[in-house]
Length: 216
Image 1 (tube, rainbow, N blue to C red):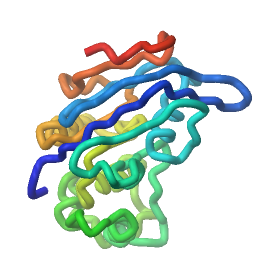
Image 2 (image 1 turned 45 degrees about the vertical axis):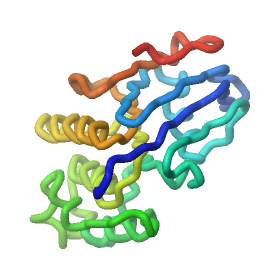
Image 3 (image 1 turned 30 degrees about the vertical axis):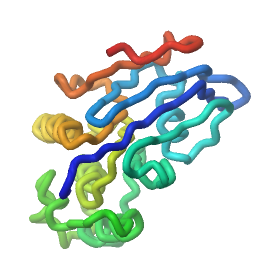
């Protein structure tokens, strides 16, 4: 990455309806370059839905999501990396081929993809040419997370990213979130695993009511 990110992300009065019921409403917050938001709450309160809304994968029932900064003219979805519960790994392709596909799919003219460097972040280089069908659950998760490093994007949306990771890899993930913040990136993370001091804000969807903002 040649220069720091400068994007600010803001939600204003957003609401989410799923299965005929409202999960949350009037949710507003602003995240500046370098901020990391920890999203917490019981199952079914809308943690995954919130991230999918920001990524443009679910419609908003109300409100809006916007960005400002140097890349404000770019659609929000094109500024985000979303890593959800599913890894998006094709078993018939090698580890390298999987990551190459995703970098080609996600890459824009402004992003410099580096597949080899991304493979090294979680130690996938020695198995780069192995079929992804032979990977363990943890290795598949590492491959999904490698997308974050292959094509730099300012906003990370990580839904339970530490699932299936070993202790050393969880620590590497924590370091990655902190490094992303130091580069001006924004991270929104749902996790039940302690990740140290990686977060600058917290949001508990169990207690969200009108106009409540993340706690600094």
